[in-house]
Image 1 (cartoon, rainbow, N blue to C red):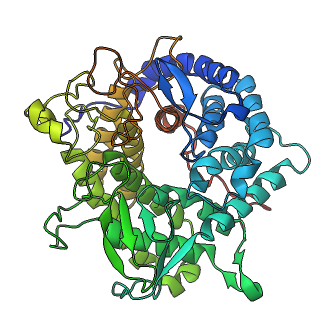
Image 2: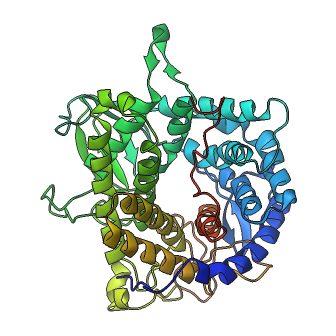
Image 3: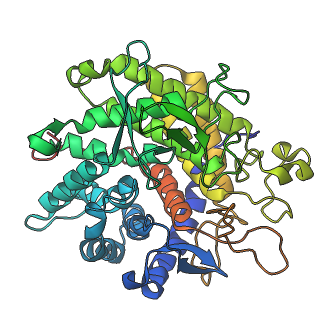
Amino acid sequence: MIRSNESLTAEALRGKLARLWQVSAGKIVDVDRSCPPERGAPVFTVDGRYTARGWTEWTQGFVYGSALLDFDATGERALLDLGRRRTLEVMAPHLTHGGVHDHGFNNVSTYGALRRLALEGRFAPEGYELAFYELALKVSGAVQAARWTKIENAQPEPGGCAELGYVHSFNGPHSLFADTLRTLRALALSHALGHVLQGEGDQRFSLLARLVQHAETTARFTVYYGEGRDAYDVAGRVAHESLFDVVNGRYRCPSTQQGYSAFSTWTRGLAWVVLGYAELLEWIATRPEEELAPLGGKGAIEARWLRAARTTSEFHLAHVASCGVPYWDTGAPGLARLGDWGSKPADPYNEHEPVDSSAAAIAAQGLLRLSRVLAALGEHADARRYRQAGLTTLATLLEEPYLALDPRHQGLLLHAVYHRPNGWDHVPRGRKVPCGEACQWGDYHLRELALLVQREIDGRPWLTFFGPSVSGGER
């Protein structure tokens, strides 16, 4: 269980954040030079060097999105130019990629970031450049929403959507991933820009409806609430994958691809849910009531998403080490050999189970965002508790052994795990479990978390994926 530093402030992290940005930029340039796009997107490091791992190309947007985050924090124009150029040269195939559920990762991190930076006045877009970014985001959201499975025989929650469904994972139409919740940002931006998905006979499908239905389906089937749904129904537990019968549309069972079991919690999947709902709550607060009325009403939607966010956040805080870093799965069998691991800082060099620093970075951002949501609702005690937990976790990640200060190591956030069951993560010589390596989503989300706090310290607007609204932008 986390032991939050109750006196920690954002300002107190200024020096550590400055050090992060100092080491970060060189790593971004180094990775760009050593990992040209034609070799495949870099995924994780082996002996400190980034390498590709063909499964899906879901990390490419993190590579170039990281350059844009660094520019946002430091104003270093070369990083803006790198992210801007690579987005134009490399990212187009991701816009029309109909085989993955990762549009919010790849395209919002690049086209979305460039749009936001342009609207914030951080650079002057040329000619149709802003319109180009917005067109890309419209396309991306619609293509993502086309991966749709409708649940035919699920009774909606009282006051909920009359229909349920989900953006299915790359495993197929039967598969709902917890991760996909954060990729709903693509649908959100596309809808906000006035776009729709069109099908046979010019039938129009609302991207907002599909976003809400996916989030409602995830809250209902992926998140547990301790209500006796099965023998392992612990409040806040998250199933990485939920399986449905595509013949009759009925829910079948929990599953997992990257976790230990269907009845334990893969901690990065949990982190995606914590962050995903917190961010969606920020976005939906900006939407008018009338467009949400047909979907059950804004207040009812927010209440269910808030319940999911709080329940999963509580589970996260109870199942991390005292420093805020979790081990890779709450049911990993080697945890029993670590004794009372939750009462002390995580040990990335232990001999039994790896930690996952990337899950810590993702969840910490979710905690900070949820804190802000709760503060706006007047729930100041819980808002402060989540904020201090988020800051405490960030403080941990800004220090060794997690922050990679060695310029020879291309990673930024050490001790991340990708796919433990498949054995894809590098185990250093003389070690028994993966450690000492980085991954693109870990590096990206540490930068995004750091930027969130950096902008607060600098007195700049709160960082959101949807950014400011201007005439000709969100409609």
